[in-house]
Image 1 (spheres, helix red, strand yellow):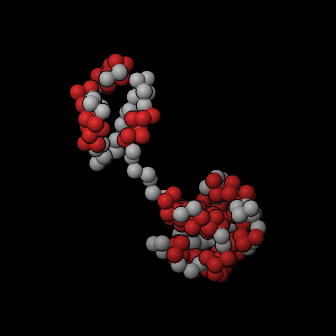
Image 2: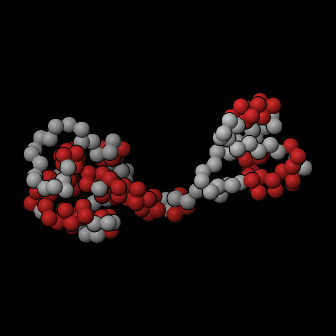
Image 3: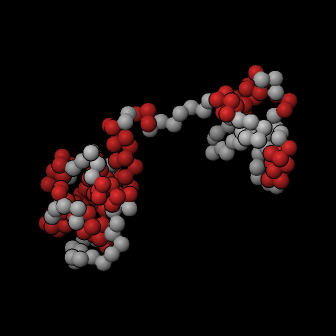
Length: 187
């Protein structure tokens, strides 16, 4: 077992922090009440987190420097925690102090454990999508800004001798009813 289940559950719960603090928060403008509550909750896990709130109190300026860091996961941490923590434990501390660093932390863990390919979306295989479709299972494209599969769609339609059967409807400006009619009619 590589992952501590209690740590994982707390990580998935965004490090908790919803309760009343059991210990007064030190006076530091950068340290919010929710950050302190999360640290108190993480401390209850023990292990590498034992005494974390005392460490933060005793080294406020070092922890603030970490808090102010643009990429906190890439610099040394107070008490060398960056060397003592697993990726998940670093993630928990980031959730406490710098939630904006979570995505990079998770990406690093995925890269190290599973490989780079698990971070890259697979390219669209329109032929495979077509093979999976049926008259009652149409291909419907929901696009994001800058995405335009029309050229590839028309290429597939030509290869299947169906270019005259393609009906492209851009939703917006009252096109919804036209799209519903097209879907119901199988075009």
